[in-house]
Image (cartoon, rainbow, N blue to C red):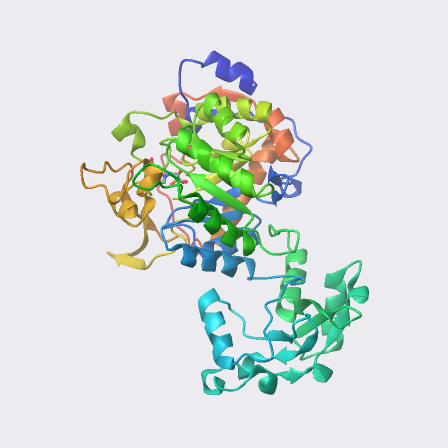
Amino acid sequence: KTADEFFRLHADTALTYDDVTLATRHSAVLPRNTITETELSPNLHLSLPIISADMDTVTEAPMAIAMATNGGLGLIHYNMTEREQIKQVARVKNNIHGLIQDPIKIGPDAYIADVLEIIEEKGYKFSTFPVVDDQGKLLGLLPGRVVKQRYRDRRVIEAMTPRADVYTISTADIEGDPIAAADKFFNEHLGIHKLLVVDPNDRLHGLFTLSDIERINDEQRTNVKPARDREFRLVCGAAVSASRTNDGELDRDRFIGHIGALVDEGLDAVAISTAHGHSEGVGQAIRMVREAFADLTIIAGNVTSAEGVAFLAEAGANTIKVGQGPGSICTTRIVAGVGIPQLTALYVTTRAATKYGVKILADGGITKSGDIVKALTLADAVMCGGLLAGCREAPGQILEIDGKLYKQYRGMGSLEAMKAGSAARYGHSKQDKNRKIAAEGIEALKEVSGSLDSVLNQLAGGLQSGMGYLGASNLAEHKERARYIRVSPAGQRESSPHDVIEVKTNKD
Ligand code: XMP
């Protein structure tokens, strides 16, 4: 049955991923030729519709870098200081560039000690800087080999390579295909790692690095397409807390000031994540952000109803997060007795989203690639926590228990996470001493699952197989061609390996 026929027929039962299966369709599409691109807003396109959750055991800069490199998006959590979060976003945005259009510059009168301090404060992973005067005119290049503690008392102008010895290319020479122009230069100048772009007045307009160009060339040889912004930087999102002061008000200056600092670093999407998105405070926070940042992609939630989607869309959100209680560490349904099984919630919300021109993010409850295939018959992207929390790129230490390796994974509504800052997401205050905070999540462990590259490869491969079975060459066709059928308990048992002893092989 089509989605409309199927969910109308099951209107009085809430269903989730394992309750249904998809019918195979005649296909002329090979899985490897399917395109998994999705759009979360006019300004945010992903080549893989997978987003890592804004949870403190899932997404910090290393996860966000790996997610975007694989075509997805990471949402940096907010259980850290605002300053630290800005630093994390800067790390992602500075990770790899084609042409760095606004490279970090140093004035000639600074000391090496100042440069070291900036590197430490911003968390930069590079130490070579163009040196420019007040007008932006190129004076030289400060090489990384002199940016050392032992030279801290030297002035930049004395330590830099002077202008006459710095390799440059003109803005006119990189018109058309800047990467090809830079590639040609590096091939002809072996041993040179930086190339500066200058205009006819010798003002600095950009910087190429050899390692970025090599990496881009490698990417073009594989079918993994990183998710990048207009300036060719990796995309990055961050969650912000819409927490209230003691008198119940949102501190506008602080809230907007923090988002502004993230935007200055190049933030692509801000997420206003709460357990109950269909609430006044969330609407007010979205309106404030939209008013201050007309083009910023706003992800907001969570809701599970058509009215919830309409409310958040009207406030100004672009992408609505759907899911109340499906997450692997969630106890919201048990503690609060609310929430709707995820596939039904996705059906209801995606119908409203089409009306309001917003996108839907299926958040939580994804435990295997087949769930992603099913979710994307309705939603525009999926958000995963537990599936990614065992990866090397997730924050936290690896623990060894009885010879097996694990990483911590906890709900943002667990007591420990709420104490660390996420209490507002669940409508509590961590200072609240009058009543006991009711946890809506648990603390758990995930078996270590290797690198994110290998996990995402498996998930993307599964998605492409599913699209091949449905005869869909892209995600729009995937939605159109989906036909659903309810699965019996015996059918569910039959779906997993059974009546054999599985032989485990090395996964990574
Ligand atoms: P998965 O299934 O991918 O779910 O592990 C991740 C999503 O779960 C949500 N989340 C929570 N929900 N209590 C809840 O009810 C919690 O403590 C909690 N922590 C996270 C969140 O939407 C996340 O993306």
